[in-house]
Length: 412
Ligand code: EZ4
Ligand code: CO
Image (cartoon, rainbow, N blue to C red):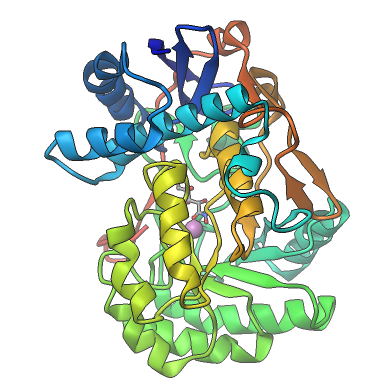
């Protein structure tokens, strides 16, 4: 059989998503997530103009060969746009193969290595009482691990959290738990790393005192520190036993992690903006990280992320796949099948999609007792309702960015 049709679907139920839908000559369909937050239409063009024409008539069974062909024949390798596009093809072909086998994808990937996936949610607050409320709310929702983000005295914004009400997209309507906001220009936020560093250890002390020693706590530094600042923070957070400190320094300079590592035993996670195994090669081999944050959607698909995680397993480094709401339900399903099957699963980020998103994407996953499971429907277990998707046209949206008090643009 061959690939008959490949359609790129853009929809914005609670936020923008780009989905590739492949149909084979015997009528089987597969879905892939190609969503690149804030740069969605670049991937749409890459797929429509340069990938779809190459897929028509190809053998849908040849997943690895198709991946290698798309990666190598372009000459221009890597990069977020290219790799999100290739990822969607890889996911859709795995979806088709598993549907044809009549199995949930995790069975084809080796079967379940555990009963479910420990997932963490995002608690945040401008001050301690509101942060505690947010933690309690997440515990009530069943989360057994929680990321802690906090306001900093003197700063207006809390970075990297659910968009703040009206700025999110108008009125009370949910624009998903996500820092990106609808509008023609990115929102500007303020930042002061020294104020943040003074404030954060006390927040973790308070959270530990309130919620006890057992609850796994995580924190995302969102690339905002210099290496020496990150080393200092990691050291100061040691008494509060973090599950991980994420993106403590900007992702481009991987050697920075060597310096951080020399000073602290706080576990480190990085890689949500990485796109290939090459981005992880040295920091895995040198054991500079503890968790691989790569997402199926941004690492070029299930095939390359599985290889990266198998390499990481040699060093007892585990998965911590990126799972914000800008990973679509298709990308989340791919992450769950992969996470369930590999041995070195660590934790899965899980932010929950909005109601309209869940109507557009019909999903088979379950969330019980703090654990995710992809379900047992054949394939990825996600179907796209085209009529529902058609109700929500693309709306321009950008991640916010930040400036220091003197007007300098800082790392986001
Ligand atoms: O800001 O996914 O750990 N999670 C994160 C995310 C990112 C967004 C960027 O698209 O850092 O919330
Ligand atoms: Co992050």
